[in-house]
Length: 141
Image (cartoon, rainbow, N blue to C red; front, side, top):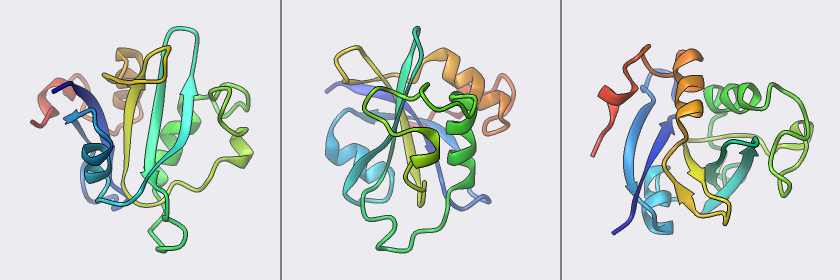
C-alpha cells in the first residue's frame, strides 16, 4: 500500500504536531484528522512544490475549535499573499476557517498525495511546529 509522509497539526495547542506516515487512502487521511468527512481545505503551491491541507468538511457545523497553528502555517507558506495558493483554491482572504485537527500532504502534478516536500518541512520547523532539525525524529508509523 502506498503511504505518504504527512504533518498532523492538532487544533489543541497543547498537543504536539508530528510528521507521520499515512496510507494514501481517503479513509486513512480522514482517520488522521479524527474521522470526519475529508475536505481539501486549502491547496498551496509554488513552482517547486505543492501541498494540500485536509480538514473535516463539517468543521463549522460541528463547532470544531480554531486551528491557529495550521492557519499560521498556511499564511506562512503563501507569505500571506493571495494568488500563491493553487489555482483551485480561494484567495487568502476567502480561505475557509481551519478548524479541528488538520493533515498536510505533498501533491504531485496530477493532484495525488505525496510526501510532504522538504521545503515545507523546513518551513514547519522554522515556524516552531517541530523541533529544529528534529522532524525526522518525530516521524510516527
